[in-house]
Image (cartoon, rainbow, N blue to C red; front, side):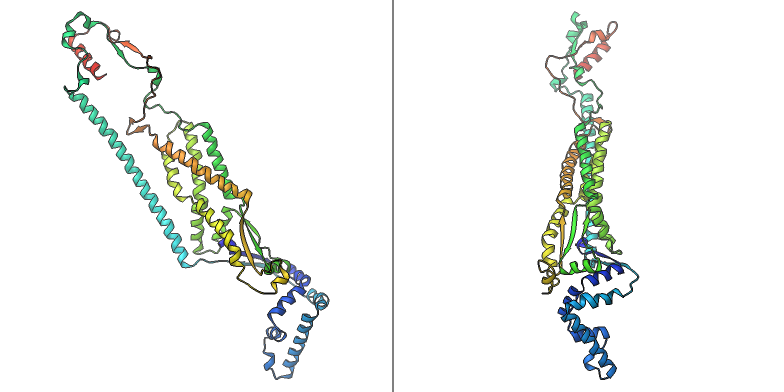
Length: 436
């Protein structure tokens, strides 16, 4: 609405005089439909001619009414004598005339409430995320403590705690024979527990770049246009040189929202936060996440920020609003001025009709950018936030599964020792073997 009704007119006196000369017959036709001879002269002379009794004033009124009657009834006079009169007028000066729609107090309160509500939701999400991370950390640490206590306690009723080597077998000659222990396929997870692989492919990196490009093109390129039609705008354009047709981008529309100043800066801040800054920051974070991931750096923090910043992205709301404005604005503005004379000037008979239309080709950048932004953000949040390799220093991921059941790495315990084992060392070996 603000973009539709914020109008600017650069005043050029020479252009105005040229327009009056060229379109004087049409102007007189419109004036005649609004004022009679006497009414127009009363305005020109700033007196009530019907009530005047002085001879001088009556003479002025009579001369004025005769001139106006000639101009009304003889169009050729307007093209000849009237044009010469106007051509002799000297013009100077210039300036800028503006029409601004200033918001009511209620809209400012609404904008403040929206921003505070989203900010409070953001703060709550941050604390909820911290609490969830702390709960996960405590859960992992508690599980580790329980496992450590179970190992130290060595419960006798657990079948897994039964010695693989009993005391009877220790006395047999075979006790000192090498014992084969299956350690699994070491090559299948030939890395340390904290080894980290990339979460996103190079193709997904290119997809995030495409998302950022479409997002910034949608913000900065002209995607909407305002057209002002009707008899009034046609005459203003021909006579006064007024051109109210203008293209808008999301960025320029943001500045237009606050052009009235004062409290309208709050309107501009609200529009800019949810339509310009929010999507731009989220697109930049997506690129940053994938770049850091390619460098094998942690991305969970940025992935969480991508999730949080989604509360400040409202392109879907704007899309609904722009469609409603495009559908309803022409019929609303067409009823503002109704005059039969407009039918003689404009083809459709309207006096004023304002349209705010989307530019299909460039507006597609917003649609594509929004779709890519939603999809890539979902993937980044899902994979970047869920896969946490280290929580409180403990590995919470999983090793790769061993492919093939016959791939093992057998090592002989007897070969790991140099020399004979005494009873205490052998007892310790039995305990360690039980743990394996």
